[in-house]
Image (cartoon, rainbow, N blue to C red; front, side):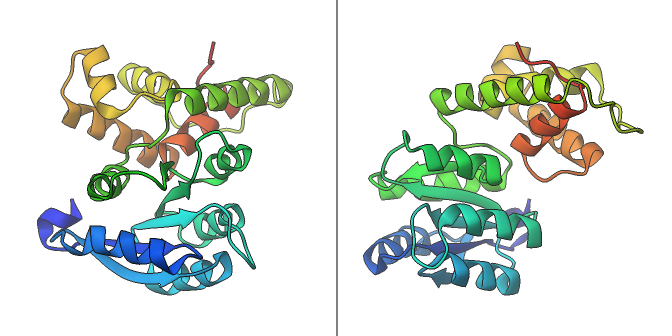
Length: 226
């Protein structure tokens, strides 16, 4: 992992409120393994900075002037697909937050989160975890089911990379919104083993996030969500 080799996790903070940006910066500044490399006050500026700075993680406000967080997320995932994006929101019930997850965000943080929880959230998504609660996971599963029905007539695109039985088990649990710790407990394996399986899945499918892997697997009929 990068932080162990001496390279800190590079973070870009995006919010149109200077006070929130400052609070997040202070929360991260004390961490030796995290470096705030830039700040942006709107989505358009965020896309420009992300393309230049190549951050590992972006903390992205949902609602901003010029370009909102959803559009910025979509653009950043296209230009810097390895970047993990955490949405900043006042409520986890917002419909546009669901759209942001579908656009490529790894999860979200509520703006009233304890600031000492922010560094661990950054580390978690950098390691491949998703910050999504069970209700949001249920919405995503429903969306995947709709996608599966909608594309039932479309023939699979060949060749499809072959996943092992264990990798398929892990992917199914990822689709249920489970994190690495929960998957490890369910399959009676170590958390590090789960991380290795997730990394292998992403490498085989040539994707960059857990949610992308689930969407791909449903679309190519590698995975049927019930």
